[in-house]
Amino acid sequence: MGNVFSSIFGKLWNSNKEIRILILGLDGAGKTTILYKLQMGEVVKTKPTIGFNVETLTYKNISINMWDLGGQTSIRPYWRCYYANTAAVIFVVDSTDQDRVDVAKKELHMMLKEDELSDSALLVFANKQDQPGALTAAEVSKALGLVELKDRSWSIVASSAIKGEGLTEGLDWLIDVIKEEQL
Ligand SMILES: Nc1nc2c(ncn2[C@@H]2O[C@H](COP(=O)(O)OP(=O)(O)OP(=O)(O)O)[C@@H](O)[C@H]2O)c(=O)[nH]1
Ligand SMILES: [Mg+2]
Image 1: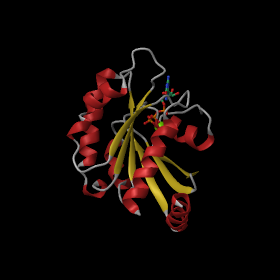
Image 2: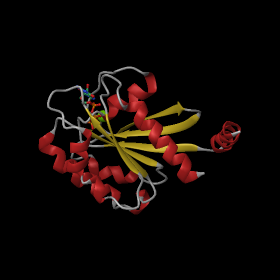
Image 3: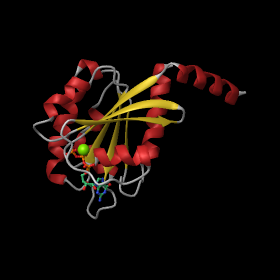
Image 4: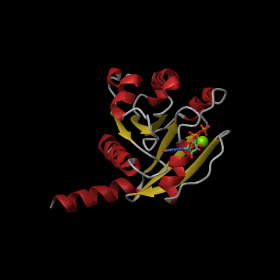
């Protein structure tokens, strides 16, 4: 019975929903690699993103417009142009880049202060877990001060975009939260 209901609700929810997700984070964190690994199941050779990449993914019958924005210092001020109507932000951290985790923290908290993102869920990928010396997800969470976040659904997942690990786990969590919050 539960399955019947969830399938009916699923269909209702799907019929008129297209959700928008932003992938943000410092340059070199792995955002573009994650976008194309999710979309094509392949590791693509990337160049630093100047501007953005946008792809439509169908995941669990849901159409997702996924925007991957460039993370270089000079480009970050433009992130805010993309915040409207965003269901969720995926914030990607290079877990080996311990020197810049403070910068990532600052950018993350600045972004989350914006009114347009007040209802957006947050998924953090503690990426590059395949590399020696990578901070664990718990360490990245602490360094980013995630427990300080109030009134927001958030989660952190350890990932390796290169190996394809953690990505669907993270996206599953995100889709469940978005469905709960928007139904
Ligand atoms: N070892 C390892 N390398 C990764 C992983 N994810 C991405 N990379 C590499 O990190 C580099 C930067 O990846 P991108 O996906 O271009 O990074 P980005 O976040 O899109 O960077 P910008 O476009 O400059 O903001 C590339 O050489 C990727 O192959 C990972 O999980 N593990
Ligand atoms: Mg990129």
